[in-house]
Image 1: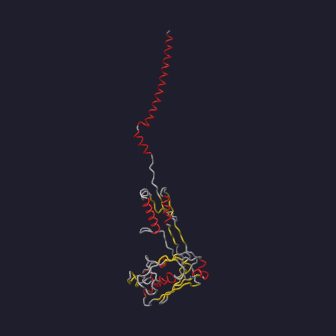
Image 2: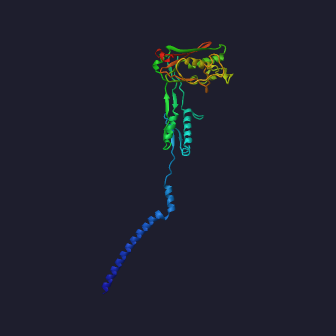
Length: 332
């Protein structure tokens, strides 16, 4: 009888231990579920803050303007900083001004636009090289920046370079025929003024104007100062005669205009004096001032020509010459 009770007790204990184990496993599952629940729900305020801190801030759109020759970064900006999201028209206005400043320059920086310095022929018949016309295409730059405004990135400056439009093989023949000429006269006693005429005439002598080339009197002649030998002489300023370094060179530019006007060209810039000048008929002048008024034209013919100046003791003659095979293209 005693053995039966002992066996029954062992079975009950075994069952009890098994039940305790199952309960322990259930409790563990509940505890795990409660722990996961606590991670998601238990502290909602702290969890939201932590998740928000983990989200990286979106970097602003940035545009870099690059020089195509040097690959230098000229300007870096954010459209947002320029007010793109606030007023798009104001933003466009700022981009237009930026393109203008890059092309034409500011007080702090030289612009990319450079007038052509024309080639010339030296006394031995060789070519003295000038420099090409360089233009930054402002409207195209504005378009490129606007296209990049939403996505950012690099914008390459759209720069065009125009070399002089002539064949070096034609240079030896450009003096063959004269297609236009004009002469003006001056007082031999005005030594200072005459010296200025002579120097400016030398500056334009044997200059080659190729097809499509732009001629600028101020660019070709350059500054008129004492370092270059220019003398004080009377010049017209605001309808008055005043003394100035380089006075008299307008006779050179006006003589040249009357010669050039005999062949087909396109005038870009020409100005009249505020007083009658006497050495050319009224309205047939071309006044110039370095850094200001200029005499400019474009050779719209398909052939080149050469400017030749002849300075005498009392006269100045400007001739337009070219190769015989080009003559018919320049005669009106």
